[in-house]
Length: 129
Image 1 (spheres, rainbow, N blue to C red):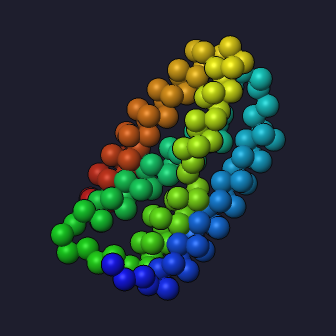
Image 2: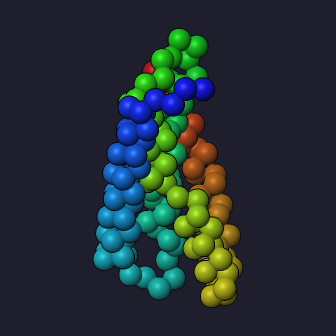
């Protein structure tokens, strides 16, 4: 495998933009949704949106004649990698459990996984049409 400097730069730029966008979503969520017993909406939102977008890209990436490009590196690895977050999802579930909010933790896990998979599939189907 050969390293491509352009792809590395695009991944870095995409990652920075994705991380900044993720941070802005968390600020928005804290400002507008202050409910004590609510789900971690910022992480849930970015993960579901990211699942949908990666589903769209997946439909292209799986085509036999698809040519990987710096744009793909920017979007899939960089932007979506920086935007979505599994580590925050894990930490927020541990926090909910430690606070005794077991039902919310289970609900959060269920929604994240089932709707996340559904969003990926919907994105895949939409991009194929």
